[in-house]
Amino acid sequence: MQIYNTLNRKKEEFIPSTPNEVKMYVCGPTVYDYFHIGNARSFIIADTISKYFRYRGMKVKFVMNLTDVDDKIIKKANEQNVESKEVAEVYSTAFFEDLVKLGVTPSEDNFYPKATEHMSEIIDMIKKIEEKGHAYNVNGNVFFDVRSFKGYGKLSGKNLDDLESGARVEINTEKKNPLDFALWKKAKDGEPYWESPWGNGRPGWHIECSAMSTKHLGESIDIHAGGNDLIFPHHENEIAQSEAANSKEFVKYWMHFGFLNIDNQKMSKSLGNFFTARELLKKYPYEALRMLYMQTHYRGPLNFSQELIEAAHSGVKKIYVFRNKLLNIDKSGESIDMAPYYEKFNSAMDDDFNSAKAIATIFEVVNTYDKLANTANLSKEGAEAILEFLDKIANGVLGIYNPENGLPKKVSGEKFVKLLVDFRFAEKQNKNFAIADKIRDFLADLGVTLLDSKEGSTFEISDDSFGKLTDETLVNFFIDERAEAKANKDFGMADKIRDFLKEHGVILQDGKDGTTFTLEN
RNA sequence: GGCGGCGUGGCCAAGCGGUCUAAGGCGAAGGUCUGCAAAACCUUUAUUCAUCGGUUCGAAUCCGAUCGCCGCCUCCA
Image (cartoon, rainbow, N blue to C red):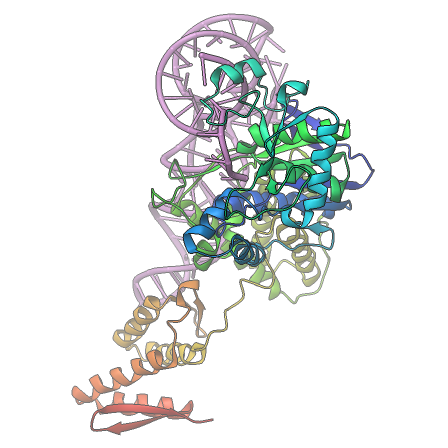
């Protein structure tokens, strides 16, 4: 297996320190808001990588931190006039909820530690750094002395002299060197604080990752990942801290994920192109989002747009259509050897997680066996082998498919949708196309797509339909049609509607102010 | 100024020295089906890889130049 290592800027053979066990750490969110679709990309990539390792039979210890004390959280708490702890709690909870919505399925070896629950580890680590002469304390602020650490810049490919000459003017004059960064920040009035040997304060941003990584995975780990904006300074600083404290190589493989832009622009609230994951997932299933993300290499940039998520969604639907056909096959016979496809998938993923190529293998299976499924040249055994492949690969690793989803949705008004569809089909048989088309258009507006065949019509309810398909709306269509028929003195049609509804347990009651209905049990 | 990345069909995207007249997805076109549609299915859809040079028996793939785009160097996944 090859992984691109930012440290050496090339793909390297992946050899975990303990055979068949992967220790990986991914920089998680600062919980001051709902996470956005750019954050979601990182979480999805990290999830897929860990799932792939597990699918290949490796044990994965996965850690993603939650930064729950930070300037941004404090700022938000001040704005809302609440404790920063409350802000952190609200958005931590939301984080876990949204993670599930992204199709991230945590295993028992996934840990999501919080910074505030690791204060003693953080403080111990700072002490260690201080003892080894890499930190200094100025009035309760503790800084890392960048010049004292020889390897500083090895990850980002920067050297200290260049950095210093390009450094922006620092307001903080306490630092010996403008590039020195805070390990411990002295508490200002009204800020949350913890007691420490340097006085009351809170940890700097970088130290928490070093401390939690060490606590949960050990002093030396296999993979550390995050967005590529974290390379400098965050990850560079983590290396400095951890290696200064532990005198050991901190991370063997550094992985960095490409950034997500929207219509070629950085996502920002002021530009109005800011989407939270939970917002987007109301419109599209997570499979579509993951399809979009997985069709691009994880290191590359991704330009998000409405058009692209819709294209990805169409791709997901294609797999579901195929799956539904497989489910209906009942002819027994020979199974299919899926081994070559597994191998193809594996070799794509083994090459630095080339998920785009891996997905091509899935569509190759879809295209190849779709033909056989259509001509009934596929056996039940064969179909099952393919379904298992889809479940293991498309669902279990990539998350672009879920056997639980993609089935016809159960919604409240479904029963009445069926009535409309059946009524329409009967009228269509009578060549009463005017009303047939009217029903079709009516349902289309509600997000219901009709699928006609000679034997009858079935229908699909789209995600847009939620909340629209109420019993009232649907029955009222009949009532309105009947009223119109009556007005046109077409009593044949009016009675037909009344009788049809009665047959299906809907009793109409004509009154002075119009028609109402009651339901029979 | 320093560091790094990218430019492949209408859109997205894989490929990173020969198997490339370039995978896959979306879209589009034609067809089958249909009362008409929709959905589904079938077929078609890049002799070409920003431009110009070079290396090589051979380049989308390596080197150089040019043009264009982007990220990091300050909080950010």
